[in-house]
Image 1 (cartoon, rainbow, N blue to C red):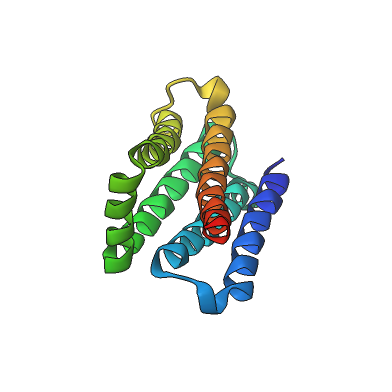
Image 2: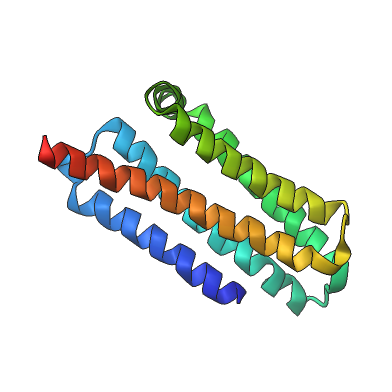
Length: 163
């Protein structure tokens, strides 16, 4: 299952990369930020989906497997967010999206919060019987977040062509 999730995330990376290559001369700063967000989110999901697979090879199992995976995923997620927000263009994009599409911005951050809460529930062992469900929930929500950003990018392109 985790390999399949990683493959799905890889598709998002491929779509975003394809858009960036085929439209290289027409890409604006906002679109570039969205492409980077889709690629980064997709790559993060690929890595996060493979963390438990890799840890199992080292004999980590049970609740320890899911805690180690959730901590790794959460740390990687915060590193990605921090690095993204260090760039002025990305901060400006976030502000612009909050102004022009407050509902879309809210949905994005609600998804982000749900991802992180799912991982924290694993870390604190709230219900060890469903650790894997919480972890998979975080992965799927992250895929949905990437799909949401990709859809925004595509629909913006369609809107420009119609204008």
